[in-house]
Amino acid sequence: MYYLDFFTSVHEQLQPQAYLEIGVAEGKCLRLSRCRTVGIDPGFALVVPIDGDIALFRTTSDEYFSRDNPLEPTQGRPFDMAFIDGLHLFEFALRDFINTERNSSPNGLIIFDDVLPRSVKEAARARATNLWTGDVYPILEVLAKYRPGLSVLPVDTWPTGLLLVTGLDPEDTTLADHYDEIVAQFRRPDPQPVPEDLMDRLTVLQPEMVLESGFLEILRDQREDVAAMRGNLATTLREKLGSDFAPVG
Ligand SMILES: C[S@@+](CC[C@H](N)C(=O)[O-])C[C@H]1O[C@@H](n2cnc3c(N)ncnc32)[C@H](O)[C@@H]1O
Image (cartoon, rainbow, N blue to C red; front, side):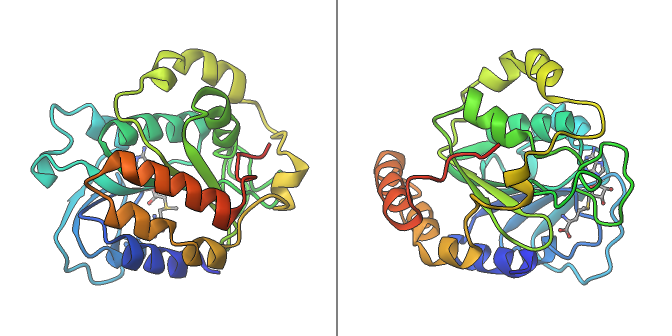
């Protein structure tokens, strides 16, 4: 399934009230949003009509999150859906996650792009391919090691895979506290040591299965009751998607 088709269904099922996109580019994904939306990109160049309730910022994600109140455009409402698709280098994606989670609601959904490179060349930090994942993929190992309480679902979308992350804790500072140690361990020089099973997509979920599982409706319907949502989410993830949805790699 093409990632934009998957996103269309996620928006329909989740019906977020506040959506963040880091890396807007031509606006092809941003335009799928139907709610208060914040888009951040130092070099966006829209090629599609954008007519929703959208605030665009021509800046980097680091600069945006260094502002006094990153939730000013949503009148303080935390994001309940976010797409991390800015600079495809490990440390940037890690910082984007730390900053996004801090500004998300506990029942929010954060989606990474580019976690399933199809070749070592596509995963290179020094871009050498047309479609480029860069080295975002170690984020799977990092979340498994440092944030085992998160639910992390790698999804087999075309072209370069998505990673859905729920069970968020905006107050958790583990990743920020260990930032230097994590970057020292997981930012590796090219050629990237991409795990074979990641490139073969052996332990990823099919997008159709994720959309049919009902887990997005649980996030939506129990938005105001985080404890109930977490319980039902855990059951649904286990029963509908199998217990083996932990990060690969
Ligand atoms: C792959 S494109 C985004 C595609 C878009 N999300 C979509 O699906 O239609 C990546 C974008 O990230 C932007 N970008 C690069 N560095 C960035 C940064 N530090 N912060 C935010 N965006 C960045 C680039 O300008 C580029 O437009």
